[in-house]
Structure formats: structure tokens, C-alpha cells
Length: 621
Image (cartoon, rainbow, N blue to C red):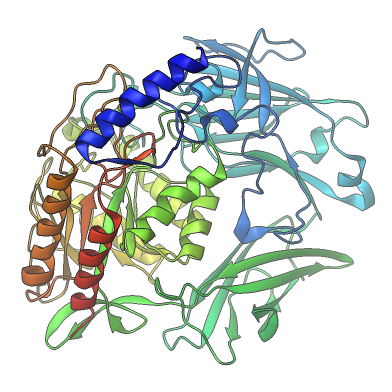
């Protein structure tokens, strides 16, 4: 494409945008080509930044950095892998070069992967030179995967080292015994990705996307990396604030034998030590904090922790972080309200589905991953509903640092056939829920869990109560919204369980009242639709929730909609709401931003003003 044509097209778009009263975040047109020359169906401002040399190069696990987040010891395996796709399961191609290639960690349906089509079965292959320092002094080598959709079997030099089911939880393997003494090491990952062809967690992925369901995201879709560790090493550190906001309970998981191992943890505030605790590894520690400083969206203060696991003459040193905050439902002037750090708080949220036109499930860059969270904060919201998807650890890191509370959904089973779910389907769903809660329960920003949305994959009304109880047992420190949208759409009905009553109302908002045991929120509302020419996903019909003609109408509609929450919802004792949504997604054009993140469709100042007024009103008794 010549420069003159680019300029003319940009001029046409700018004229259209001006006519609609829209502002673009991009001053010039972004190159639509990706690293291998393919054309992105819809490019973001970060699409052209992605290359085989810089595919998500940031350290992927901020809450367990070894020895520190500033100077981690690791080897990223993001980049080009050999690749072979198939419609049928085959034998692993040990010792065989594969003819195609894929850019990890972008799902194969995405343009950034270089593949841009679905396959039910696939093999990834990469030859890796493990640094000699990784195996020196008796160290072990761990191979880590952020997430692989759906089921993965991992081989190193022909030896199976890991088998993992579930597309949303991380997993790792000690591959030391499979390594050759010298030379390149062969890593092969065999993946089965049936998407909605079977009853597993898929969220909104569909093999045939339409309407409110979107393009699938198969294969390796989060970072892959190697790291050297002692034979006994920390696998996870979680910090839970005490009710009095003056201490943390520290829990840990250990890889390898832990008999006789000791864990020592020191807390730091702005570089100064403010508390420490020591005890047996794997047992809870009480870590008192001097002059405690609470975390909130207004003041997202985070403590840094340095932890040392000692086992004989071995030492594993890691750095972590967490905020000191509590969340609960308490009586405030006779009505059940959500309280953050003991104070009534209105959780004003956007729906955030975490989809990208270039990376599908995977943000093109870390800056892109941060963008949606920062813009949510800039628009005056204090909460995000992470909708039917689990994000990489760095997403929660940015939410923790920027200061957003998060309702965390469980990715749903395929909808529309709840009555056909087998006992095995239900058992696997429960296990996947447990894995996700276990993985994320150390994230400060997450204040509540949502096991079911609108009854999708919910096999009975009591099932929501059952899952709510399961989650509460796993994590009693957070809220549980047993079923978002009790009035819609599959297996309708209030399970009379959990911490909140949740209704959906488009355009709404819904105005539920708290009951004798639960607070009340509107779990989804709004959805005002405005498509922006040149910034929509191709070949998809618009799925309008409620069309508006231009930017002024969208602004007015949003302000009026939110004013109802301020003026009627808060007096009824409501504790929160969720507006649909922060960005457009494929056929849905009801975002505050376009799908490519280039056009902010609302006036930020107007939106922020009504949002802040609503939160202020909702913090009063």
C-alpha cells in the first residue's frame, strides 16, 4: 500500500470520525501487516510491534519471581516453534522437523500466531539450549506454561514430563531427569483443542462464532519459560489480610520434598522492613505488619515480600507482593452492603472480556494488556468484571498496581444443553473451578468469584449453591456471587446462596434490593451500541443491545443510565453494578472503546464525573 493511499484512507476515516464526534487514540494509520506478512483483520496500535524476537518478553509470574522481578533467572520460550496441525490424534513427531511454524504464545486462530486457523489436534516442537548455569550445583530445571487450550501433553527428549487438562490453569514440570547431558533439548507439546465440541470450560469461544460468542483460542496462549530451581522450591506464595488489617496469613506450596524445610518471609513497605515471620514450609505463617497501610482503588499500596525456603544446604529465594485489604458483606444501617476494608463501597464495574482482534485471547503486548485496565480506571470505574475468562498473571499484576477490584468469573461450559451434562462433565468443571481459585487466590485485586453466568453450563438451580459452597471452602476471604443474572437465561432461578443477589437488565439498570443475608448488585446492564466504520471486526453482523446514533447520544445514554444507579440504586441499598462493556468484541459494538482500541467512543470527562458521583453516593451509609 502506498503512502498516498494510506493518507487518503486516513483522511476519509478522520472525516467520518469527525462527523460522528469521535476521537481516535492513534494519530496515524497502523500497519495492518503482522510479522510474517499476513494482514490483520483488524489491527490494534500494538499489532506491528509483535515479532518473533519480542513476543511478550516480560517475566510472566510477578507474584513468584526468582530471585526478584527486576532480575529474574529464567529463559523465555516465547517465539517461533515448529508446528503441525491435524484433524486427528497422531503420534508425537520425535526427532522430526515440522514443516510449519507458529509464534508462541498467540492462539493458532489469531493472526499474530501466523497460523490463523483452527485445528482440533496440533503439535508444537522446539529445540532448546538450556544454559549450563541452570543445571550447575545440583539445580533442577522447571518448564512452565501459563495456559494451553485445551489439553496438553508435554515431552522432553521423548520422555513425557507433563499431562494437563484444562485451558485456563497454569502448570509446570521438573524436566531435569529428561535432559540430555549436552546439546539441544527437544520439547514437544501435543494439544487437543475441541473447543465447544465437548463439555469443558470454553467461556465464549465457539468453533462457529456468532452474536455474543466469539472466535476460538486454541493451543499455547500464555507464556512458556524455563527456570532453574533447587530440588525443593517454592511453587506458590499467597498473602491473605487479617480481618484487623494489621497482618497477613502467608500460605505456601512447595515442589519437591519439604520435610524439615523452613520458610522465612520479610515484608517491605517502600523498601523498609515492616514485618517478618518464620515457620515450617507448607504451614500457614502469621506475619504482623508495623504501621499497616491498606490497599484500595484510591490508594493501591502494595507490600513487597522476600521469602527464603531453606532445606538442608539448599536455599530458594523469591520475591512476591500483595495488598492489605479485606472484603465482606456487613449490615450498614440495617441493610446488607459490600464493605471494603470495613467501609461501605459501591463496586462500579465494566464488563471486560479480554478479547483482541489480533491476538484473540492473548493481548499483543504487555502495554496492550495494561491499556484496558488503565482506561477503565481513567473512566472513573473502581471494579472490573473479568467475564468468563481467566487472564495471564500479568493482567492481575496490573489490576493490583493500578487499583481495580475484580469480580472473577469462571469460564463457562458450552451453553444450551445443561440437561445433557454428564456426571463426568460436572466433576471436571468442579475440578477446574478448584484449580482456578487455587491459582488466583493470592491476587489482591480479586474480591469475588462468579461460578455461573446466566445459567450457562449450570445443570440445576442447586448447582450454583453447591459451587458457591465449594468456593467458600477453598477461599473464605472473598465474596461469592453464586449466579450472575438469576433472572436470565438458562436454568433461571435464585439459588438463595452466596453473598450477593445479582440480576441482569438491558438497558436497565436493574435495581435489586439486598435481602436478609445478601448484598445486591446489577451484574450486567447498559450495552449501548455504536459502531465506528473502519474499526469493526469484518464479516460479522452487529449485535445491537440498544443502538444510539452518535457519540453525543452514547454519552447522554451512559450518563443517564448511571445516574439511575446513583439516584435510585444507592438509596435501595445496592452495592454495585457492571456496565457492558469496556471495548467492542467482534459482533458486539457496545464498548466504550472500539475493538481495535483506537477510538474512545465516549467523552472521558463526562463518564468519569458520573462514575465518581455514583461511587461517592454509594460509599455513604
